[in-house]
Amino acid sequence: MAVSREGARLARALRQRLSAQQSTPLCARGFASTRPAHTATVKDDGIADIESTSSFTAPQPDQSIVKAFEEARSRDHKERRLPGNRYQYHPPKYNRGPLHPIQAPPSSDPTARDFVPGPFSFPRLKHTYDSTIAPDLMTLTYKHIPPGTTPPESQKGLLRQWDGSSPYHKNRPSRGPRGGGSSRLGIIERDITWNNIPEIEAVTINSYAPLAADNKEYLHVARAVVQAISGQFPEVTTVKHNVIHWGVRKGSKAGAKTTLRGGAAYDFVDKLVTLVLPKIKDWPGIKATSGDSAGNIAFGMQPAWMAYFPEIEFNYDMYPPKLMPGCDIFIHTSATSDRQGRLLMEALGFPFYGKVTH
Image 1 (cartoon, rainbow, N blue to C red):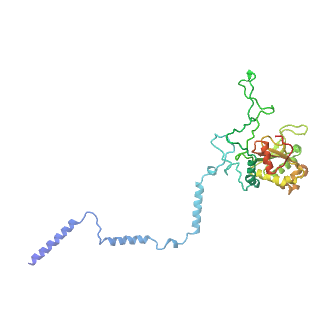
Image 2 (image 1 turned 90 degrees about the horizontal axis):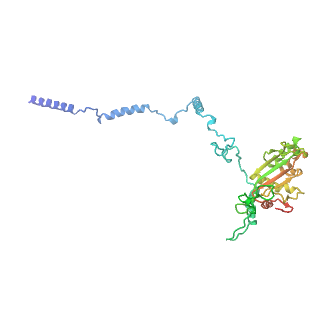
């Protein structure tokens, strides 16, 4: 009986051992009992590499290390930077035509050679012109044309035709203007409309000193006077023809001139009308025959009148009285006739005297 029990126990143990060997897989397998112990070991090794303190509480690096780093970075930046001629733009000095590949920028571009900053103020006379003078001129010169009627056309700008009294007149070009002194036609006066109101375009100041050929002091004073009253550096003018009676030689320097445009022109005209001309007691005004038939008006200033300019009046001792020159002032307008130019000048405050001829 005992032998049979021991035999059955041995057979059962042998069977269990054989079944365990057959069920063992060829690859590694993780069991639930062994996984937590292995994970805990790996986790402990990872935490060991992490610092216990935060980076916010870490001390700052030494200043010598920071300075060395900055010097190295700036040195590296300078080595990698392109030379100055690679990225600096210089506009061309000369205009070689519209077909040249390199074109100068417009005058409004700050990189242009002829760039002028501004305007920094609005002229008082320009504001008066826009608000009062321009509407008054348009209303004063209004011409009503009834609907359906054809306005008359001026023949002033047309060349004369041959009358055909001779067979040689055929295929001839048109005849030139009368007079023979000029081959150019006169400017046709355009009616003043809302987009064609006369205004000031430029003011030219010209000072002539005929004695400057022998004594350069006259030229120096003329340049100083023109620069003082205009605020611009003038250019020196030269004589174009020989005049033996006056001792003037061709090519000699004998004057200075400058041209004002935009706000500077309005400021100069405002200064004339407000400060200079009212102080001249014996000034009759501008002669009514003044003009070039194109809307431009000119008048002169005697040497004694130049002292009334505020730029010269406060420091008159700087200019020698015997060397003080006079000047001619040319006011360029957008008018197309002397009549329209006189209307604009009278509205600005310039008086006229004499008989009107054109």
